[in-house]
Amino acid sequence: MSKPIGIEVSIAVAEAVGLCDVDVVAAYPITPQTHIVEHLSELVADGHLDADFVPVESEHSAMSACIGSSAAGARTFTSTCSQGYALMSELCYIASALRLPIVMAVANRALSAPINIWNDHADLMYARDTGWIQLIAENGQEAVDMSVLAFRIGEDKKVSLPVQVNLDGFTMSHVIEPIAIPDEKEVKKFLPPFKPVLRLDPANPVTFGPVGMPDVYTEARKAQDEALKATKPVIQKIFNDFAKQFGRQYKLIETYKTEDADTIIVAIGSIAQTAMTAIDAMRAKGKKVGIARIRVFRPFPAAELFKAIKGAKNLVLLDRVSAFAGGEISGPVALEIKSVLFDNKHFPKVGNFLVGLGGRDVTGQNFEEMVERVASAKNGDLPAYEFINVRE
Image (cartoon, rainbow, N blue to C red; front, top):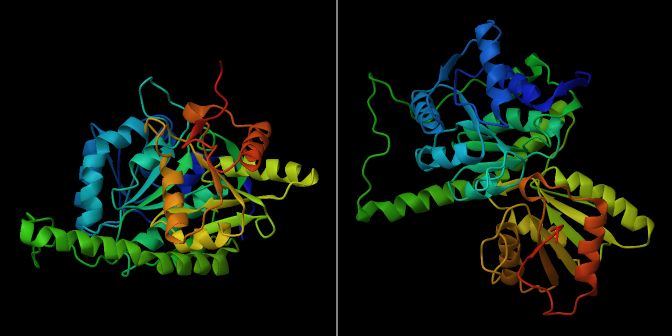
């Protein structure tokens, strides 16, 4: 097992992608993901990675090139975020509908306006209905591991879908952390060569993405939905295989001190690590608080999440994105969880808090305030959502 080294997370992600024997990288620079594809271009230019690096004129063109290369049978990677993802999104729907196992790193960043290059989850939530599998890293080691896992998951013949690896922009992407880069031989042992289910081949012509008339469109959409739904057990099995080989275990939902918790925080991304520190402090004061962290956002692990949170009297649900719902319904993460609670006829007190927008810090004190806000509230007193840490 390799020893941890101090390395910028973006560079480490690029190194991990390079270990996966990618054939094509098509990308356009945008802060804060640029260092990922910039380093990949260096690996190609220096002869360390035998791949075609395709510099394109926009993110829209990047995904177009990725669709073509993946359809032709090439292991394909790209990276983007924020406005770049918004421009790319037209093609992202096509990539998933064509069942192409493209891997994309998203260094999560706020969407404009106002222009903001710092982290929140606006792009992650914008992408949630494009049909891609969405993995979420909490730190640099996890971003590296998820980059390797993404290829194995997407290319599994029971899956054959594109995969996003989400890592918080700047908060993670530009931070130097101790990271164990997997050994190249171990990665090759874990990740077999890409063998596409179907590919563009002049010798054996096939058609990708023909016109879907009304008499077939619904069936095609249902088939895509069933395919995504069926990936949950495959993802967990691959997580388990990774743990056996590399010693790091991942689950669809991961918990910390939830067994006896009266209040459970539900969060995604790097903010969960701050929350765990705050939980330790609250536990020292006698408050029974825990956290459930969502590792896979699509397909949404509803059953696994309900199992993790059903014992709590109070739930603190965090969204790192503006709800823009006029105060009447909750943010996107909270809506997913409230749907799970309703379907299971389980009704704890629920507070939805919009936090960390545009890179604003969320402190341990903020977590204590949110926990106290929900615990002390009477049923019906909590609004659909609240902005936290807003300056007057």
